[in-house]
Length: 353
Image (cartoon, rainbow, N blue to C red):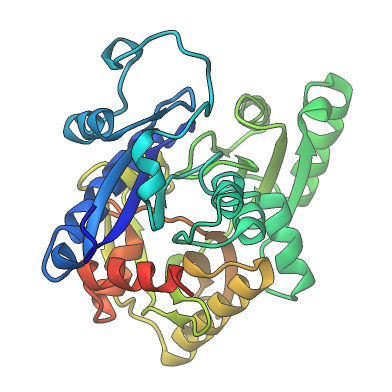
């Protein structure tokens, strides 16, 4: 390792349904680290976590980056190894700052953050608490409620309740009476719209509940909010700042996984065309949302804006947002005057705080 350069550990992949998104995010971050002045400041070590949670060193990590998709079992140097983390690849001992580019469970839910705390190494992103609360939609909504932040109506359920036919019928009746259709059914602990259903009738609601249960044991059901979809990003820890507000427009019925990661399915307007009062309110609520869940360093907060009622509602927070070339987080900061190279540099500087 060069003594003049800081050794950065790029960690990506992960035992999550967002595995491939993580790889694409890692490609963007690595490109930024190799660009401009960053190339003189940092030495990069690559670590790939496969779909079974096993850690692999740079040779394998570079193979996954080149492929741009998760590696299959037969593409790994050794097969049929025990699942999960077993040992540190040798070069991991040299890492000075970790940059986890992991989305979903095991990556942004406090698990890996706790690991970094145990080995006493600085890392990019929120700590254990902020990551865990930000990841779990039920805990997140409870924290937002406690902080008095505006949200849409929602209900929660557990897998044991949903798999009980009698309770499921009572739940559906309650949801129909309270929300009507359409409504959204979401696993509590996933991102990138994985496992989410927009239900227009009783059959779709029942199927959506069952689908969500295949991803998580805890489920959130939300009333459909008709409004513009707006997002705001944060950067920093001791002094958190907000980006401009951006808007997502899409041609699909809702902003699902395919729409998020397929070209020409959606477009962004940054900054969003909004009254200054609304933009200011969203930026203030973004900081309050981070404070409510103890998030910092890197986060994106999503909102609905009902123009008819002139009302802003918080949808959710994402404490390790995507870094792909279609991701809002880097685009929001680019429109705020911080390009991708500067953004990655500031994130690593924040990790030292």
